[in-house]
Length: 131
Length: 360
Image (tube, rainbow over all chains, first blue to last red; front, side, top):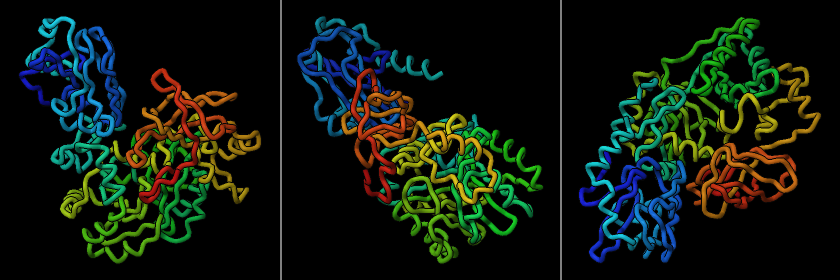
């Protein structure tokens, strides 16, 4: 079973969301997603300053196996992008919840994050997809 | 559950991600496909290829049978142990399978065909056998492992000290029975190494000895990127029954001489050759970001579209490469439709990598 940290929020498209102290959100792909995709070879994070709606595709992670869109879990403005992944995409495999983060978002509605899945609900969702 | 090789429990114990491959439960990787790829290019890796079909063919007229069956000519095999790569064609010149055949001794050849094509291959081999009175025996009692990489042969010599001298004396594309094992200096990676056929009940011991010597297990994922970098064809992707060797980069495997050798598919290949072969298989290199993938459309100025037959990220080059079937008149570049965008790729002659060195 893949790692699903209890303090994060999740989406059914396998992004995770961390709520930072300054109200911004850090977003990446889950351990389960990186395991399914295999070794990453290219990461295209979004450009800072871009406004996105919930569900917009805003990043691409491409592995030896497939290219996959990453969707913004909620609406807001991209405030920072993890540029270091351009030279070291494998960090998304090795540390998906840490140095493998993809972008930071300033949400339009601070409460929107509460509508996302918690760790238990995401774990149940992953298990339901596998069976 | 699919078929399992005698090494299945070892794969699971070594952390393999197991996938279905042609009805077999096989390791895709043991953690990182890219690290496994580099392991073979830089040191030594071992592959379980026990799913492949080994067939012994015996009879007084076995040579005549193979002269008829194969597009390459087994008369090139004069010394016992010598191996030959060939396609097996249907009457239209389409490729039923590609294979390696070893000359064991007078009246005995050994053939290795693909796992995914097992049933149709065996049916075809049997159908053609009748007129030549040859006996076919599937060697399901043998497991097969490939050990490949610049240090692979040395590791095998350490693992099988009694056979080291004879194995060490093998020239490329030669095999020998050594100490009850069949050892061939062949492979599917573009590196030096051996392929070994081992009785099922001995293969686990050999696998574990090799692991103790530092040889890492390599999954099918890296097997595919290694063979692609080496410019080696994959049956079902780069050629199949709808394509001939002449349009699959395999014209070099068709033995036209002597002219009176009547192999299956010869007439169709002759017609195609005389009419002019309209398509060919080329290598593509994408220096920009993005990964070339199977079935992407290749756009060639003023000519018909082509298609990528095998595309992937090349760990050695650090960007994407592919084999593609394209119009024969293609120039130095083409465009590939990649996720809704057109990107420019360079057209090259495979291989991309040989013996660890980039050659495009």
